[in-house]
Structures are given as structure tokens and as C-alpha cells.
Length: 110
Image (cartoon, rainbow, N blue to C red; front, side, top):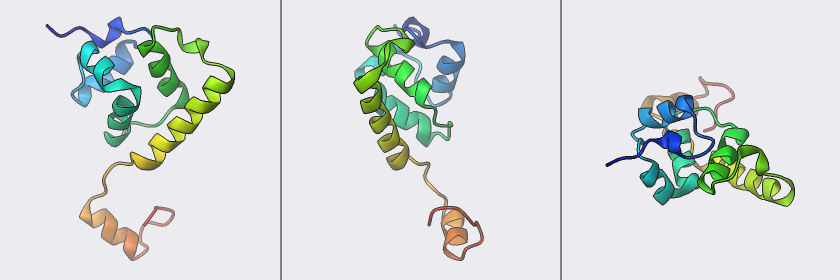
């Protein structure tokens, strides 16, 4: 029987609902996949990146309060977060890629 995401510390109803929209509804599954894989899915679904949300997830999966993240640990998590953002962009459609190639979407990566 699935267990609700809200049983994990630092995951409230809004975060649980956002994860549910991408098909992640079971706390055990979230624990098994880990924070980085879950957050990558979060980003790929088009959710906005938010560093505090990411490290709150990491802390919650460790059974720790969100504000327990400090110092060197927080710096290391920031590096992981930045790497996730860089590699987990949403897939672009063929039309978006074509518009990028001909420069019709200024400021967008090619």
C-alpha cells in the first residue's frame, strides 16, 4: 500500500501535489529513488528550480528539518543543485529547436 509523500519531513501538501502531477505519489518510491533523481523529474516536468526546495527535500529524506542544512554541507548541496539544473532541462520540441536555430527565440539556448 502506498504511503503519502507528506509522511516525509519537509514535504507539505503543495510539494506532494506537484510531485503527484508528475506521477510520484508514494513516499517509499521517493526514498528509493533519492533526492537527486526525484528533483530531476521535478525539473523535467517544467517545475521551477528552487534551491531551498531542493535541500529541504534532501534534508527530509534524511529525517532532518529543512533548516538543518548549513556550512560546507549547504555549499556541496548548492553544487549538486546547480548540476541538476544544468542537466535536467525540459526536452524541447522540434519546433522550439527550429526556432532557436534561426534565432526567433532570443535569449534561449540553442
